[in-house]
Image (tube, rainbow over the protein chains, first blue to last red):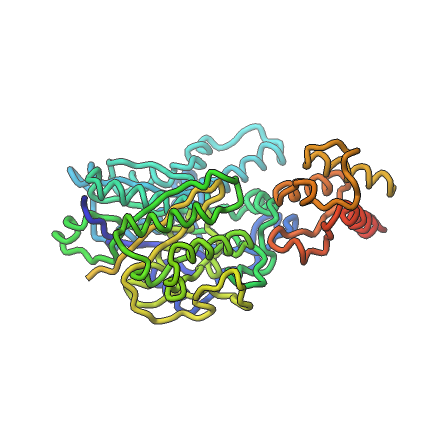
Amino acid sequence: MNRVVITGAGTINPLGHSVAATFEAMREGRSGIGDLDIRDVERLTVRIGAQVKGYAPDERFNRQQQALYDRFTQFTLIAADEALTQSGLSFSGQLAAETGVVLGTSGGGLGTLDDNYRAVYEEGKNRVHPFIVPKLMNNAAASHVSMTYNVKGPSFTVATACASSNHAMGQAFHLIRSGLARVMITGGSESMLCFGGVKAWEGLRVMSKDACRPFSANRNGMVQGEGAGIFVFEDYAHAKKRGADILAEVVGFSMTSDASDIVMPSQQGAARAIAGALTDARISADQVGYINAHGTGTAANDKTECAAVASVFGRQADQVMISSTKSMHGHLIGGTGAVELLACIMALKDGVIAPTIGYEEPDPECALDVVPNEAREASVDHVLSNAFAFGGLNAVLALKKIG
Amino acid sequence: MGAEVKQTIVEIIAEQAVLEPSDISLDQSLEDLGIDSMGLVEAIFSIEERFDIQVPFNANEPESSEFDISSVASIIAAVDGLIAAQKAG
């Protein structure tokens, strides 16, 4: 089995337009959540979100590109550019054939769908732009990455709601570990902050109208975000041979299904995924210093997740730090695991644990060290990243410090 | 108005509970009727659609909501209140 390392990272999310800016915001415990600035916001009851601010598509993409790139694809390509630049890799010949792209998204080109439904239903138009289908399809981002970087190996998109990115990165990990690929570009992207996207979530009545306060007794729901996180996963021997800078090693991955409810999470399903990632990584709970929680800020997730961690970690549960960075960047749905992996890399590489901000009141059902409100310096060797999706699909990654 | 609201709400709740409206008694709670959180959210949606009102309800904090869902009777009373408040003027 090949070892798998991360040699590039890139992002654009509500906390910043680069990894460095995101790390800084996480260190400072800054919130990217604010008033939604979208069309027809006055017809929504949920009017907050974590939007990518200060981004002008015209400065990055020409008119022809914008005709093909939905906002989720734009975010992907911006993040991929940063990750690939950092990795120093370019693809031709055999390496191109042994490199693929696996990305997570839940809504894909939902904004494009929303805009064009408006055009035909609301405005009564009988004609839409010829590229709507290739623009909105869920695999558009993965395909444009493969075309932009001449990547010719296994490429596809994974859609498992809120666990999409973790499932995608797990596939990338497996492809390299088993020898089916040498390099994988992976992560995920989401852009659902449009009228139809928020309206659909509003209907479920799990969204907060004021803030995302994971694990806090007074939490009242999730806040949606948008953005992308993209990583270069690489065969360790290949990275070592070319003298690449290694950010972290991916050492374990586990997937489980609750097989119980379409929206309510299961403690057992989550616990099996966490335990599975430890087993796959061949580490014990006491070696894990930090967990990036799924931590949505809903009543259901947070208590179930804490119970799952407590059941797997036993007495060690009091020693491990667990934070939800969704308190800062919101819930990026299919892209969330990718942006959250950045907090894991920051913990391993820089020894800084991102906080759970907005924490106001302890909840006896979430009695773990949730790193409240302020980042913490700590040296950790192993970390986990949790993702538990609607539909009961769970995916947990284990990472290790390199060096 | 009152009797009509009551009858409609009983029908909505009966549909979620997979019972006949005649099987529903006003002092029962949704739990007694076997209606879970998803059934409740669907019932609230039906109430909003049927009466064209907005029901303040967050599934994360059902007990601290202004909308009292402790029994069938309390839901009817709450909807009566919302209709009066939202249809006034």
